[in-house]
Length: 64
Image 1: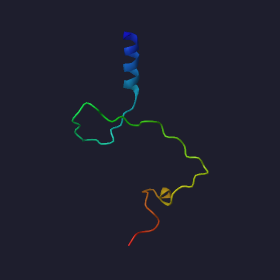
Image 2 (image 1 turned 180 degrees about the vertical axis):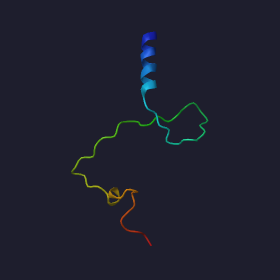
Image 3 (image 1 turned 30 degrees about the vertical axis):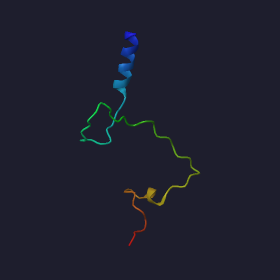
Image 4 (image 1 turned 120 degrees about the vertical axis):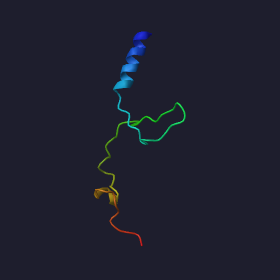
């Protein structure tokens, strides 16, 4: 039982956990754990949106 706990704690320490809201003061014991899953590649047959080609993600037209 102790060996299993030890292995579990090692794997939890090795994981990278990035806080999406740095500076937020949590009130309870629950904390976010990101990334939830690894990113998967988008298939080539799915068309990219217009803003995907701009480095800042800006649409090629503006609203007036």
